[in-house]
Image 1 (cartoon, rainbow, N blue to C red):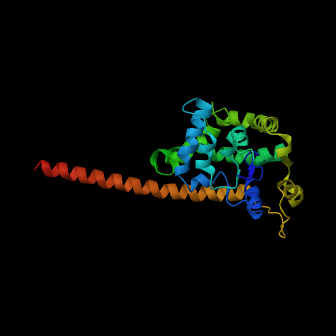
Image 2 (image 1 turned 135 degrees about the horizontal axis):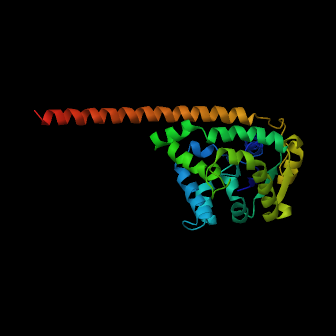
Image 3 (image 1 turned 45 degrees about the horizontal axis):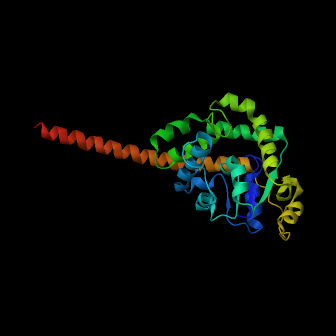
Length: 254
């Protein structure tokens, strides 16, 4: 593990993933990574249960290696929910904290709140135990759990407290991270301070500028489509099973 990018979601986490991978930190773990590696959700759920609900042992370096050992860097949630744990587990890793104007950040973060509290997700979660249920359960610990990272299960309350959560998270990271391991960074700073801090050569390509909101919206759209196809398949199988049972009952009554 080379880099822990522990900024809040919607601070340019997709851009940071791209930048870190350009610098050789391949692969970099992002919040959407478990959406394509469903088995990882159960491990994150165990970590959330242990930290936020006192159920099961807290993760050790060995546990984190089992989950993140194939990655050179992390960014976005759910990883940021374990900022202090990861800072202690990986003392060799540098920590980057990306700042964004808080009002600009909130406008983007509110879009994520809308996605997380979308009632369609709740319905699909009930009908899709293979994909959406484990991923939604994992993210519920972040955004919809009164004992979880955001400390609420209410949409309006989260909208009201979001800025406070932002400030508290940044203060917490700065408090628990040794100063010589921490870079306070803004995306507009570009390659210079990031490369100097990480001891990397400055690439001969421009610093990436990705539209995080659009990228994640498209990802959620594709993920929901994938889930709906599984739901349709499951409903079809249930329908066929019911038809077979009814046919068998009818035959038995002859």
